[in-house]
Image (cartoon, rainbow, N blue to C red; front, side, top):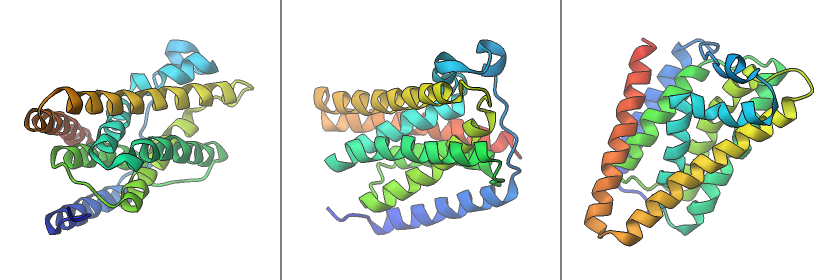
Length: 211
Protein backbone atom coordinates (compact mmCIF):
# COMPACT_ATOMS: atom_id res chain seq x y z
CA UNK A 1 0.00 0.00 0.00
CA UNK A 2 1.31 3.43 -0.91
CA UNK A 3 1.86 5.72 2.05
CA UNK A 4 -0.46 8.30 0.50
CA UNK A 5 -2.48 8.14 -2.70
CA UNK A 6 -2.83 10.88 -5.30
CA UNK A 7 -6.46 11.23 -4.27
CA UNK A 8 -5.40 11.66 -0.66
CA UNK A 9 -2.88 14.33 -1.69
CA UNK A 10 -5.59 16.31 -3.44
CA UNK A 11 -7.95 15.96 -0.49
CA UNK A 12 -5.27 17.02 1.97
CA UNK A 13 -4.38 20.06 -0.14
CA UNK A 14 -8.03 21.12 -0.31
CA UNK A 15 -8.54 20.66 3.41
CA UNK A 16 -5.34 22.52 4.23
CA UNK A 17 -6.46 25.45 2.08
CA UNK A 18 -9.86 25.49 3.77
CA UNK A 19 -8.28 25.37 7.20
CA UNK A 20 -5.80 28.13 6.41
CA UNK A 21 -8.55 30.37 5.05
CA UNK A 22 -10.67 30.00 8.16
CA UNK A 23 -7.70 30.49 10.47
CA UNK A 24 -6.89 33.82 8.86
CA UNK A 25 -10.45 35.07 8.66
CA UNK A 26 -11.77 34.45 12.18
CA UNK A 27 -11.17 36.35 15.46
CA UNK A 28 -9.42 34.53 18.27
CA UNK A 29 -11.67 35.03 21.26
CA UNK A 30 -15.05 33.63 20.26
CA UNK A 31 -14.86 30.58 22.52
CA UNK A 32 -17.19 30.82 25.52
CA UNK A 33 -16.66 28.53 28.50
CA UNK A 34 -19.58 27.18 30.52
CA UNK A 35 -17.46 25.46 33.12
CA UNK A 36 -16.76 28.57 35.15
CA UNK A 37 -20.44 28.84 36.02
CA UNK A 38 -20.90 25.08 36.43
CA UNK A 39 -17.94 24.18 38.63
CA UNK A 40 -16.41 27.45 39.70
CA UNK A 41 -13.84 27.38 36.92
CA UNK A 42 -11.01 25.91 38.96
CA UNK A 43 -9.72 22.63 40.29
CA UNK A 44 -9.21 19.19 38.79
CA UNK A 45 -12.91 18.39 38.41
CA UNK A 46 -13.63 21.61 36.52
CA UNK A 47 -10.68 20.93 34.24
CA UNK A 48 -11.78 17.33 33.67
CA UNK A 49 -15.34 18.34 32.82
CA UNK A 50 -14.30 21.27 30.64
CA UNK A 51 -13.57 19.29 27.42
CA UNK A 52 -16.70 17.22 27.95
CA UNK A 53 -18.96 20.29 28.00
CA UNK A 54 -18.04 21.52 24.52
CA UNK A 55 -19.21 19.35 21.61
CA UNK A 56 -16.49 20.71 19.34
CA UNK A 57 -13.72 19.71 21.75
CA UNK A 58 -15.30 16.36 22.56
CA UNK A 59 -15.78 15.31 18.92
CA UNK A 60 -12.29 16.41 17.89
CA UNK A 61 -10.67 14.45 20.71
CA UNK A 62 -12.68 11.33 19.96
CA UNK A 63 -11.79 11.76 16.29
CA UNK A 64 -8.07 11.76 17.09
CA UNK A 65 -8.42 8.30 18.62
CA UNK A 66 -10.55 6.98 15.77
CA UNK A 67 -8.18 8.31 13.11
CA UNK A 68 -5.16 6.94 14.97
CA UNK A 69 -6.74 3.48 14.88
CA UNK A 70 -7.05 3.74 11.09
CA UNK A 71 -3.27 4.14 10.78
CA UNK A 72 -0.49 1.64 11.32
CA UNK A 73 0.43 0.62 14.85
CA UNK A 74 2.95 3.40 15.73
CA UNK A 75 0.17 5.93 15.28
CA UNK A 76 -1.90 4.14 17.93
CA UNK A 77 0.13 5.78 20.64
CA UNK A 78 1.87 8.65 18.87
CA UNK A 79 -1.18 10.64 17.75
CA UNK A 80 -3.04 10.36 21.09
CA UNK A 81 0.20 11.35 22.81
CA UNK A 82 0.99 14.27 20.50
CA UNK A 83 -2.39 15.91 21.00
CA UNK A 84 -2.23 16.39 24.81
CA UNK A 85 1.41 17.45 24.63
CA UNK A 86 0.78 20.11 22.00
CA UNK A 87 -2.49 21.07 23.64
CA UNK A 88 -0.51 21.83 26.79
CA UNK A 89 1.82 24.01 24.75
CA UNK A 90 -1.17 25.83 23.29
CA UNK A 91 -2.62 26.32 26.77
CA UNK A 92 0.66 27.87 27.90
CA UNK A 93 0.41 30.34 25.01
CA UNK A 94 -3.13 31.23 26.01
CA UNK A 95 -2.19 31.74 29.65
CA UNK A 96 0.79 33.89 28.70
CA UNK A 97 -1.38 36.40 26.87
CA UNK A 98 0.02 35.69 23.41
CA UNK A 99 -2.51 36.63 20.73
CA UNK A 100 -3.15 33.66 18.45
CA UNK A 101 -5.62 34.51 15.67
CA UNK A 102 -8.11 32.06 14.23
CA UNK A 103 -8.36 29.76 17.23
CA UNK A 104 -12.11 29.19 16.98
CA UNK A 105 -11.79 28.57 13.25
CA UNK A 106 -9.03 26.08 13.96
CA UNK A 107 -11.22 24.21 16.43
CA UNK A 108 -14.16 24.08 14.02
CA UNK A 109 -11.85 23.07 11.18
CA UNK A 110 -10.34 20.28 13.28
CA UNK A 111 -13.74 18.62 13.68
CA UNK A 112 -14.59 18.96 10.00
CA UNK A 113 -11.23 17.85 8.67
CA UNK A 114 -10.74 14.93 11.06
CA UNK A 115 -14.25 13.75 10.26
CA UNK A 116 -13.53 13.85 6.53
CA UNK A 117 -10.22 12.04 6.98
CA UNK A 118 -11.95 9.30 8.99
CA UNK A 119 -14.85 9.00 6.55
CA UNK A 120 -12.42 8.74 3.64
CA UNK A 121 -10.09 6.38 5.51
CA UNK A 122 -7.25 8.72 4.51
CA UNK A 123 -3.94 7.50 5.94
CA UNK A 124 -1.15 10.04 5.87
CA UNK A 125 2.53 9.40 6.60
CA UNK A 126 3.10 9.41 10.34
CA UNK A 127 4.99 12.71 10.31
CA UNK A 128 2.21 14.45 8.37
CA UNK A 129 -0.48 12.99 10.61
CA UNK A 130 1.37 14.08 13.72
CA UNK A 131 1.93 17.59 12.37
CA UNK A 132 -1.75 17.99 11.52
CA UNK A 133 -2.79 16.76 14.96
CA UNK A 134 -0.28 19.13 16.57
CA UNK A 135 -1.75 22.17 14.79
CA UNK A 136 -5.26 21.30 15.91
CA UNK A 137 -4.06 20.55 19.44
CA UNK A 138 -2.48 23.98 19.80
CA UNK A 139 -5.79 25.62 18.84
CA UNK A 140 -7.74 23.54 21.34
CA UNK A 141 -5.14 24.09 24.05
CA UNK A 142 -5.03 27.82 23.47
CA UNK A 143 -8.80 28.09 23.93
CA UNK A 144 -8.49 26.21 27.22
CA UNK A 145 -5.51 28.28 28.31
CA UNK A 146 -7.30 31.59 27.79
CA UNK A 147 -10.11 30.34 30.04
CA UNK A 148 -7.89 28.68 32.63
CA UNK A 149 -8.19 30.07 36.19
CA UNK A 150 -5.40 32.38 37.27
CA UNK A 151 -5.50 31.26 40.90
CA UNK A 152 -3.42 28.53 42.50
CA UNK A 153 -5.67 25.82 41.08
CA UNK A 154 -4.54 26.38 37.49
CA UNK A 155 -2.24 23.33 37.61
CA UNK A 156 -5.03 21.10 38.91
CA UNK A 157 -7.40 22.47 36.26
CA UNK A 158 -4.84 21.77 33.54
CA UNK A 159 -4.24 18.25 34.82
CA UNK A 160 -7.97 17.64 34.72
CA UNK A 161 -8.48 18.66 31.13
CA UNK A 162 -5.39 16.75 29.97
CA UNK A 163 -6.73 13.64 31.72
CA UNK A 164 -10.14 14.05 30.07
CA UNK A 165 -8.49 14.59 26.70
CA UNK A 166 -6.45 11.40 27.03
CA UNK A 167 -9.56 9.49 28.08
CA UNK A 168 -11.46 10.70 25.02
CA UNK A 169 -8.57 9.76 22.74
CA UNK A 170 -8.42 6.27 24.25
CA UNK A 171 -12.19 5.88 23.98
CA UNK A 172 -12.12 6.61 20.26
CA UNK A 173 -9.02 4.47 19.76
CA UNK A 174 -10.16 1.35 21.60
CA UNK A 175 -13.73 1.55 20.31
CA UNK A 176 -12.41 1.56 16.74
CA UNK A 177 -9.84 -1.17 17.34
CA UNK A 178 -12.45 -3.36 19.06
CA UNK A 179 -14.92 -2.84 16.23
CA UNK A 180 -12.27 -3.72 13.66
CA UNK A 181 -11.42 -6.94 15.50
CA UNK A 182 -14.97 -8.10 16.21
CA UNK A 183 -16.60 -7.28 12.89
CA UNK A 184 -15.73 -7.99 9.30
CA UNK A 185 -13.49 -5.57 7.46
CA UNK A 186 -16.36 -4.41 5.28
CA UNK A 187 -18.73 -3.72 8.18
CA UNK A 188 -16.13 -2.06 10.38
CA UNK A 189 -15.01 0.15 7.49
CA UNK A 190 -18.62 1.17 6.90
CA UNK A 191 -19.07 2.03 10.58
CA UNK A 192 -15.90 4.11 10.49
CA UNK A 193 -17.20 5.98 7.46
CA UNK A 194 -20.51 6.65 9.19
CA UNK A 195 -18.74 7.89 12.32
CA UNK A 196 -16.46 10.11 10.26
CA UNK A 197 -19.35 11.50 8.26
CA UNK A 198 -21.23 12.33 11.45
CA UNK A 199 -18.21 14.11 12.89
CA UNK A 200 -17.64 15.97 9.61
CA UNK A 201 -21.26 17.12 9.47
CA UNK A 202 -20.94 18.43 13.01
CA UNK A 203 -17.76 20.23 11.98
CA UNK A 204 -19.54 21.71 8.98
CA UNK A 205 -22.22 23.01 11.32
CA UNK A 206 -19.59 24.58 13.58
CA UNK A 207 -17.92 26.22 10.58
CA UNK A 208 -21.19 27.51 9.10
CA UNK A 209 -22.27 28.88 12.50
CA UNK A 210 -19.20 31.12 12.47
CA UNK A 211 -20.00 32.65 9.08
